[in-house]
Image (cartoon, rainbow, N blue to C red; front, side):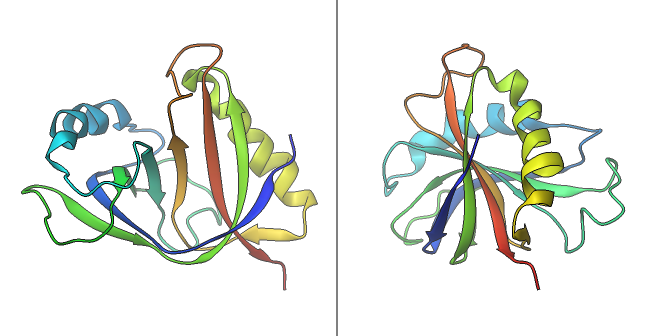
Length: 160
């Protein structure tokens, strides 16, 4: 499973976030709160859904699964002219990403992440950069269907 290395141009996202940890996972609660309000977003670009994690700097140094981070449920928008009440904005800055394709049910995503962080990254010329991590769910995403697909975008920079 080799990634495609992509240079991302800035994205404007609109959605909800919840602070959580890997131990106290609130992903279900986050998406249940976001999806009913998604129709209020009038200037979405495409139909893709974005699941993002914004980690504090050095989050993965001396990794602790209890350390909090922000998880987002969002869509890409053209601008921030009309932000529905209760929604927040997030800009994903330009930068280099390793893009992996996760095939299979979302419940097996941990296997793809394990490969990325335990095998691919340590043996690559890159290290994790301090920008949002995200998954893009398009029409091929079917949650727990074995034929489901989603893109996993990991922010990277060259090792110095």
